[in-house]
Image (tube, rainbow, N blue to C red; front, top):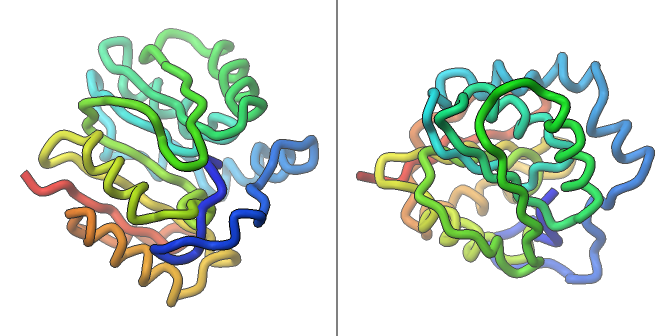
Length: 198
């Protein structure tokens, strides 16, 4: 999870905790049942092609980062971003066990900024945007990281994010310049596939 972000496009109490790294939290995030229910390869299918530059924003335990590296291939590149050093270490160790794939760059962001530069073809934020204190800033940052015509998949948990809060997230994305091109159906999730207009 990237950082201490809020449930609206403005902000929430900064004292609210991020989903922090712990043994039990890792079991919840990184287990076979969740990988079956929310298969990274199935969710990302059709979005990533060999040679792409892709960003996993809030990479957590690295399940999606791992799939992205495989799909982007040896000519591609992946940036895995997270606020928590422990999450990045866990993800890095997991991905290091894999065979050939895209080169992965790991980056620890700050609570108020992703702090990266890229010319990316695709980005993903899986179950983390609701933790961001300033969603307007997040979407503006991601917009600047993507090439024109590139896409950004945002997936949020139904058990944390109400319809009203997700509607505000959609509005924050629109304020940054994104266009919603699809609302993919995923289990236990609210989703939007965004595009940076060409």
